[in-house]
Image (cartoon, rainbow, N blue to C red; front, side):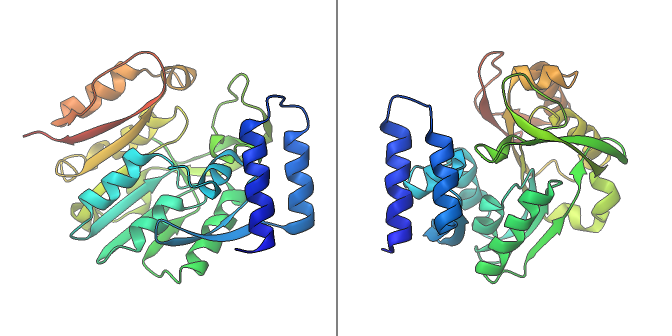
Length: 268
């Protein structure tokens, strides 16, 4: 184990165990300025981690990240197929899916900062079976504001400025409908769709409406957050009604409190 990795691991344990928050973030930035990010092998893939950020820090400490999605990737794509990663961020799930035999990945990510890391991870893993779309998905083609989260939690980019999340400001980014980017001929091969867009999930789903017949045999895993959905003018009920209308059934069941991953599977 390298000294760089040991230093970052020590920082991660300090961050998690020391009771006072003051100074933790600045210390992380100082370590990053001195040492840079650290390259690690995780879950079979190679990733360049920046432990100033929440998810990277947890991964470095071998904490599991979103086991619902990871388990679905290994289950649903065991015999190959196409994985659609909407809100791909730095590409953790895109990479792990693409490493499986006979899998193709369609990764959608509008943030330039996260796109740079996504391409870096594809390079580190020598992957040629991932198609990256530098767009957000929505129900219409337009330029939209994207609020870019601080590097302490870069997975929180959003089309809305949500209270208490902290951000670096907004940038204008292109958003398109899924059908504007992916030919209809590719849709039947899709087996798994991950949807994590900080409350804009219904906009993405409305942009998928015309292809839901062909996607009726796919599995969807959707991040559900009542607060963030409401900030985008939609609701938890609307998500469940959408999938029910297309014959996909929830695994967990509707909740109007907290944040959770819901898995919608083809009706039996």
